[in-house]
Image (cartoon, rainbow, N blue to C red; front, side):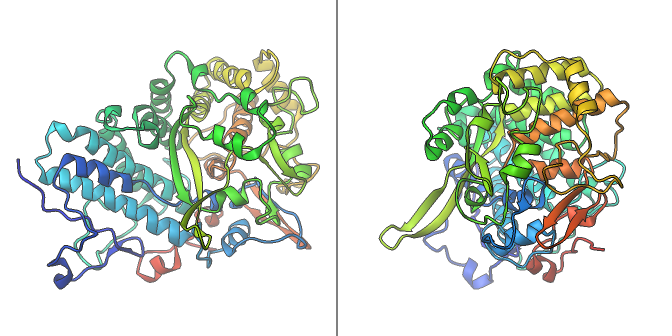
Length: 528
């Protein structure tokens, strides 16, 4: 078998360009690794997971936050610019520049692993590493697509811009890239996913839940197929995760809600690798847990109690009744904060010290990247869009049983009544979307592209699923993705000024690329 002479080069400029020169490449500095064994490929793949996340930008752009007023402290520029749907100038760890760069560093690691496998002979003994590299590359580009591209629809995928999809390690200073179309990007992601799935082997990992283990890979595939409107494939991938016992993969919110009233310990339980609900955990350098957690950071733009929590999210009426009923939602009884900012006990505040004496280091967020409850809701949504409402109802029953006190049995009539007749659309009389207020509701008009909603019952099911997804995936950026996928129009309050409105075809639904990436020659997202 041939030994690889490949070297890991992870110095990425503008997320895409490799910094190198001929003289530098003639030597091997001490901190560079020669990838010449299967074990070294495995170790390299630790770097194939992004160390930053777009979740903060996506949460601030969504309707999960509102403007509490100028008397409250703003966070960094990224928080405010995302809330106002502005192009970004901030340079924090959660800004586009850091997210883009670090994600393409992860892609570079995946590509180097694949190249090293090829140079080592590429035999079946490398299948597990090859599968992990492919699924990591697909995940990174899909994550960026949900941030920097418009939502996918078969009707518009050839019109919208995609993203570069590098498949080889960089060997030049300024490789030429083009964005291509959104369809081309999704085709590349799907190719990698489907090549990876048969190769994933949990035996490769010491702690599988920190890697794309088999169930996590299928959970990611289910999300991709849902977003790309391949309903049958989404259901098939979800089945591979849930099997015949979906209830076994639900989170034990009842247990969490009965823990001592201690935010850090409840958050630790939420992200525990021993929880059957958690399929994949990732760590990011991010202030997400401060902005969307129980801290005083960025109180001006936050998930407040009197408007959003009470009328749109955790304490809003649902299939489980109201917050004041005898059978409240467990999540609603495990919240912390005060009126201006209230959060579910989910993401604790962690810090990686570089120098403990001087107290310097990096804020960390441990996120549940793939979970059993999300997979269940993916399947329920796919069933609902296919109008297989009995199957969607069965999945919703599993979720309600795990998340609400009491032994509740839900029916189609319950969903029709609440999300059809009882809840009004969250809009003004002229149809303008309503910003968060004491008159807003979880029900917002849907404008999907690529598929149709055929009747009021099907629409009620989708409203129900979107409401539950909003709760289950709070602080994970998914609400912004749902707003994009369904063309939901939302309004953001601006203290002392008129509301700002995001219409269904607004190009700002694709967040703007980092300014240095645009300056390097990559086409910017269009703006009106």
